[in-house]
Image 1 (tube, rainbow, N blue to C red):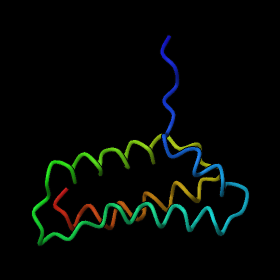
Image 2 (cartoon, rainbow, N blue to C red):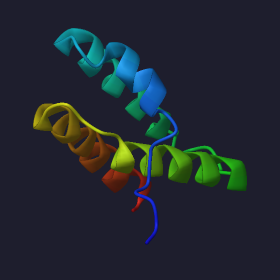
Image 3 (tube, helix red, strand yellow):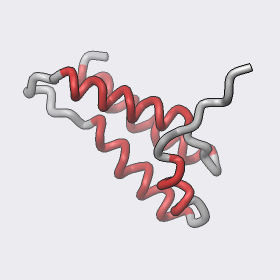
Amino acid sequence: MQPEPTALLQRWYSLVREKRAPRQDFSKAFVKAFDIPTVLKSSQDDVDFSRYMAENFATLDYKIQEEAFTVIKHWSTVYPDHGF
């Protein structure tokens, strides 16, 4: 039996988890990592960092669904602009 995946950013998230406004600010700040200008050529490091952040957001232990929806909403606006 394999252990359940854990986000490496979970400790940071747990610092702001109790209050709504800091949780939303945390989510909005970290999803900005996906705002890569389309005119720039992406390096392998950019791709690896995006995957790292996506895996962390996918495995965060969200307190309420609104946070997950915030992340999904942002991804759905960013990815079409980048050809995903």
